Image 1 (cartoon, rainbow, N blue to C red):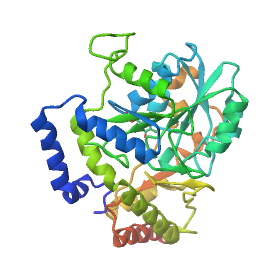
Image 2 (image 1 turned 60 degrees about the horizontal axis):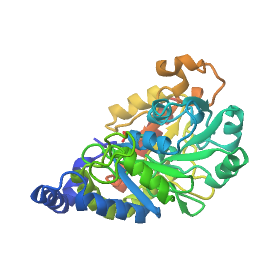
Image 3 (image 1 turned 180 degrees about the horizontal axis):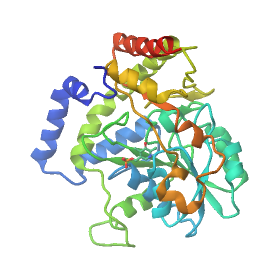
Length: 368
Ligand SMILES: *Cc1c(COP(=O)(O)O)cnc(C)c1O
């Protein structure tokens, strides 16, 4: 069986360090805040080359808190890619704004100035930029668009720890960036976790206050916030794993090259591209084919786990039926029926990658 994701094998390789980190938090009974959260925030800020990092409860809260901290006029239109995980759009509504879907590019699956321009409304105030699958958007182009139309940029980096656009790490190219440490992400906790990064000290302070009941010290609540903190045990685990992240990213990039070499020109497969100026971190390796269901069945029978990210573009979800965009002529509405995620991660050996390649090739040569 070739696993899509293998968190057990990752733990087995780090068991001593992880167990010691967990034991340390319990020994000190510093469960909320404390040194493990502070140290992780500082280390993650350094890794992302971000001036400020605030740990929060999860990646969805991170998006919502980041948006709230921008203090946009209530009911603003916010551009959201039609093809992403639902949390990106949920945060907009939860923060009191209106979701306006923009289409994605058919080769990168990302927002572009062209897709944004087609969706722009007079009340648009911000863009939720999603670095989907670990591929960074072209932030130079998107920044130019945002400046021209006076829009703020929130970067959803939940799938893109360590990704770079034109040599800059994602997260602080826009005004604020959000991360998820959901277990299956490239940097994953042993439960929920998230973070917000920003270059602005004032924004960082506001984000920290929103996430912690609107306060600075213990009982001086300046406004009503909420409770969304990065758990100290998770921070201790993440601190251990962060030291290995660069190596894991490099391995993912190597696996992607092996897939690309092995799968070029096979059937009607469309392979992921690495856009110019982009450092893709391959959270997912997503191929496209008109014969997805057959390929997925064949791979399952061959012992290869796969996933679909995502089977229904957001405008078609019942949750967004009220927007009336389900029939918009979007690329997103076609590719959701074609995308298939192959196993990806540092757990894969060259031999396993080769087996996946052979299984995929086998499907297309047998059923031509
Ligand atoms: C995982 C993910 C989120 C949400 O993160 P959680 O930690 O699960 O709340 C948001 N946006 C994208 C693009 C994601 O992949």
